[in-house]
Image 1 (spheres, rainbow, N blue to C red):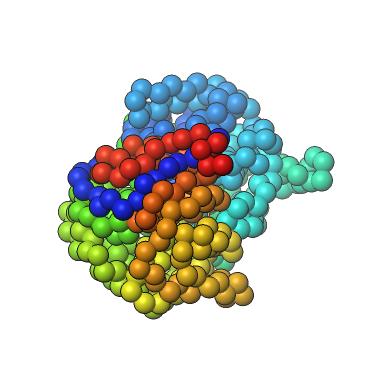
Image 2: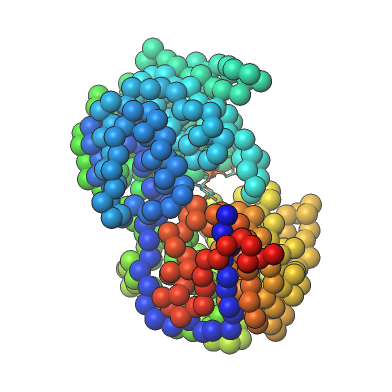
Length: 427
Ligand code: UD1
C-alpha cells in the first residue's frame, strides 16, 4: 500500500484538465448490460472503482477493452445473472447491477452490500421501489447475505422515494428501461450523475423524460441499440482541486470543467474569499491569503452543497479567519478526518449527536503523518498538507486512487510538491 508525500507551502499556478466523472461512469458501466450489443464509452476515468466495475462486467460475460480513456464493452454474451459476493462487498456501487441485470434477464442474484466507512448506507429504498415493479425478492444463502430478485414480467408503475437517493433512482431507471409500461419516479434524485445515466440510456434508445427533475418518467422499450457516449467531467475532482487552490493560495485555470454542475461549490468558495471566473467548461480561480469563515454550511441533495465536497471544504475552513460550522446531513460518519487534522494543528470540535463540526480557524497547519479513511477524506488531507508548513504523509493512498486518476500528477502539474512513496516512508 502506498502513501502520498506532500511538501506544503507552495502556491498553485498553471492550467489543468479535469478527468471524466467517476459517479457518472459507475452507473453507465452497470447500464451497458441492458444493451445486448456494444458501448463505446469516452472520457472514462482510469480509477480503481471503474476497474472494479469493469471486472464485474467480465465476470458477467462481457468483453471489454481500453484505448486511452475510451472503454469498449460488448455485452452480447453477458449471460450470467449473478454478481459474485466478493465483488459487491468490496464496492458498494456494484449494487447498480441489481437494476441492470434485472432489466436484462428478469432475474438477479446479488449480495447485500455491507456498510462502508462513511456510514451505514442501506439499500432499503432500492428494494422497496423495485418490489413494486412485479418483482419478487428473497433473501438466500448463509445469513441471508444474498438477494434473489426475479419476475416473469417487470411492470412499470408509480414509485415514491421517501428520500431522493441517487443509487435508488438509478436502480429504478435501470429496472424500468426495458419493463412493460411506464415507470414514474416521484421525489427522484436530481444529481448530474442521474442525468448522465439517463443521457446514456436515451442515446441507446431508451425513452426517459424529466431527467434532472424530481419527477422522472420511463416508458419501457423492447430493446436498446449500440451506442457511443462521452461522459462529462468530474465535478467533485474539479471541486477538490479548486479547494486545494483555496487552501494553498494561487491562481489556476481548470479546463474541461462541468461548470453548470458546480454552482453550490463555487458559491461556497466565493464566500470563503476566492475570486472565480467561469465559462461553460473552464474555471479560473484565484485565492488570496485571508480566508473567510462560513457560519453554517449544510450538505444537501443536489442542487445543494454536495456531501462529497464536505471534507475538502472542512480542510480549507481550518485556515479561515474565524469560526465555521459544517453540518453533515447525508452520511453519519463523514468527519473521520478530524483527528488527523488535529494532528496537523487544526482546531475542530465535533458535535456527534448533531453530526456537526465546529471549526476555529488557525493561522498555520503543520505537516504530520495522517491516514486516509475514505476517498474524499483522503483528498482533503492532501489539501491540508498543501497549505501546511513542512511535510505531510497521507497513508493508505489506495482510498484516494478509487476516485482520482493520479492526484500527484495533477497537483504537481500546477506546482505542488506531491509524490507517491512506499508505506514505509510513513513509519
Ligand atoms: C451516491 C454517490 C456518493 C454521494 C451520494 C450522495 C455514487 C457512486 N455515489 O451514493 O458519492 O455521496 O450519492 O450524493 O454515485 N439511503 C438509505 N437507504 C437506501 C439508500 C440510501 O437509507 O436504500 C441513505 C444513505 O444511507 C444516505 C442517503 O440515503 O444517508 C443518501 O444516499 P444515496 O443518495 O443513495 O447515495 P449513494 O447512491 O449511495
